[in-house]
Amino acid sequence: EVATASAPGALAGEMRGASFPVPLVRRQPWRLPSAAWALRRALRDWRPDLVHAHNPGMALAVSMATAAGRSVPAFVSFHGVADEDYRAAAWTFRLAALPIVACGPGVATGLTEHGVRARETIVNGISPAPPPADRQALEQEWSLSAGSPLVVSAGRLVPQKNVLLALKALVQVPGTVLAVLGEGPLEGELRRAT
Picture (cartoon, rainbow, N blue to C red):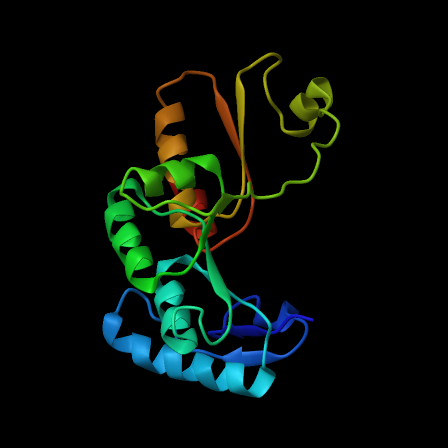
């Protein structure tokens, strides 16, 4: 049985089970006490056996709410940050003192380089690849020149995926087509850039 403690967001309606509101921290330390207090209330009401936090800010809030995992066992999964933010993330994890699960070997390496060791590394799960597309059918459907170089970007259209950079780079490769498959808040900006 799983409950969720989070700020309201686009996926909130899809969550099943008990749900507890928690204010966003957004790298603003003065918000930590209210997030920790909301988590403590959720823990008191729901009485979980384990608390799973995601990323540095929530690791601190969960650490505060669980006395660093002593009142309720807790851990944090870390999905990574921009290279320049690993030092701050490592500092935050040392302060939180919760076991860390890195979501991939690159994330684990980034932490290790800054003096923090992940307890485990679990690669994000992905579904098996579908069968390859029929190139001739794609060329017809997308009105591509036969044999032209094709690059496909599949994922959420959000800043951290930086699809705009791929678009700018491929302008330098004549005849190359970039197919962007995904949805997200940057869709309009990407359409205007093409």
